[in-house]
Image (cartoon, rainbow, N blue to C red):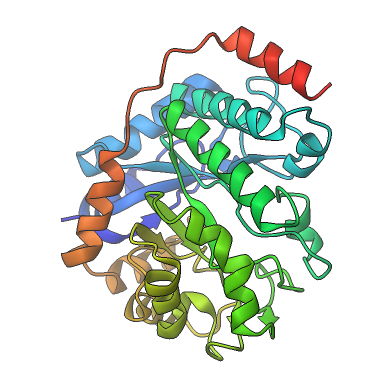
Length: 327
């Protein structure tokens, strides 16, 4: 039975000790970063080796948003502009977002990656930290929801599962959660009408990623480790897909790796995401996270059931159409 965590690895090739560890620990899935990416053939070999290590078609994730968050790039893959920049000049932003996501998904699927941690469905605002701002799609509910839906549809058309983030909303956070804990003091009724509403409209998507943000109107603990925030995601927003943590190693969270894993699962997250590939930390994560079971396993199985082959696409024509829309 797969463990309730997603693991990274050290480099572009799986080491013998990683292979043995993954065979024993059996993470539910894997996540890749730029450190793992060299040539297409080497990347295909890595994704195949990860799945061989656990003996099943485990999901392989990546953050390929475009702009500042892009793990695959030239000379082998497309350099994508920042989403907000490209959408701001698009004649039809929704169509442009769909094409962009579909083309990204095709590049990922070609090298064995079948989950993209996108759409970023947070709303841009005056307080949005610069680390997040350029990654967003707009500054109001209607715009962000429509473009995020197009992004998710494009992922699925390209044979890749989307992961909407950062649920229930990171846009009002004035700090970078990679380094410190953001706090949001907006009243709950405002959050439900704005930030949370985008995710409510996307609640049918198969997977979501939590936000390491304190919503003071709900709880004084970060959303990832807050049972009241997870209850808002499940009951208020209505999301019943697989909920993974944002990277458990980020600076926003306090305590040891073991304490972070335990708290996030106890709060209601289904799967722990651990990204840095550090050996000692991976041992802790694997020792702490139980096997997936119960409703978490049901959600995981439903999500993977949505994986499908890419829809037939004239890639050259799709690039040309996107270029014409965003010229």
